[in-house]
Image (cartoon, rainbow, N blue to C red):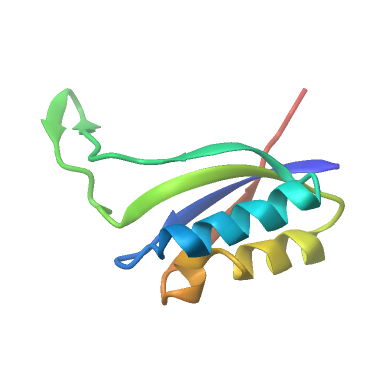
Length: 95
């Protein structure tokens, strides 16, 4: 199993019901490792504090999958994606 980081970006992240169903799907397949919604962030650039450029990042999840086809299928089921947002997929590099 490979671990992936999914980062969701949306202006309409989805309902509690949509997220509940999504997490049930992930848990049923033993895919979900963890994750969280994100609050307002702080950006740093050469020592200056400023607002992050992309304020649409609303959460992240660490998910396991056997191959890229499965992780893409799981990302397409994410409520952020279903409501017009995007989900970025990054394989996690482990030692």
